[in-house]
Length: 323
Image 1 (cartoon, one colour):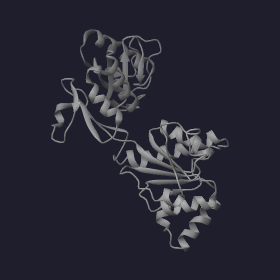
Image 2 (tube, one colour):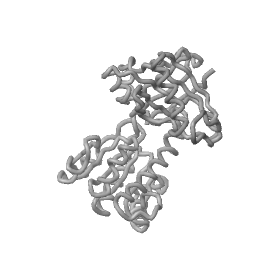
Image 3 (cartoon, helix red, strand yellow):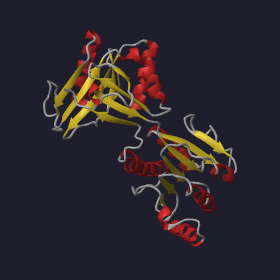
Image 4 (cartoon, helix red, strand yellow):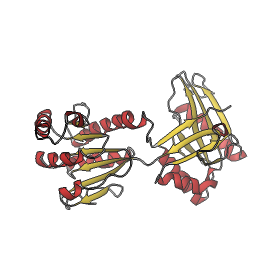
């Protein structure tokens, strides 16, 4: 993903290691990667990120290493039914356009800012192949490639048990900003969760009163029992989560939802944001399988509710094909 490439660019700048950046800026028809895909190419053959793999990436890598040798940037426009001299050829049938930028280690402050993703940041590649930040007043025609990098979506997980232990690191790997909440310090601890997972411990009343950050946010309720699940759901329904998932059976969902409606705690409309049982049906049984089914649903909802509306993809590109 883009964040990994930005971090690799930051590292290259720190180490003063020459690198070339490849970016997909346009596609037509079927292609192995989407617009905005990035890869970093090193002179010794290493690659960080991907532009699609296989012979397509091999061809771009060859051009990128040439660019490190000459110092000249270039565009590419490749038909994916040509073999380019590679044994396997390409059969996707589409077209991929992109740009190759050598010596990108020279722009360390830009990459460091993009890697941190602390706030919405607009950057791009100009038609003269220079890179830099953009402002709202910049003429669109100046840019060969434009991108808006935003902080990751938030995922709050209520409960620090075995399901949360499997879901949290997977969610972080899938570009969610994850916080786990529990009233049991022995479970919400670094013994079970890596450093990139935020941990919050306290009474459930205090934990549920925490304010969400001003970003698209999702929630998962996997506490140790129905009573605690319902307690958290009662509070979290009032927060602007785009989507909530709760562990349990369809019977559990009916029981809790009907109680909430009868008591005036929630409306049928507000409960439509809640998926219980959470997760897509993949006949999951083990805890890792359950975690995969849950995150598959959250990825789908993020694409539906955030990316498709253009509000906050991890790195949303606004693209202009090469002239």
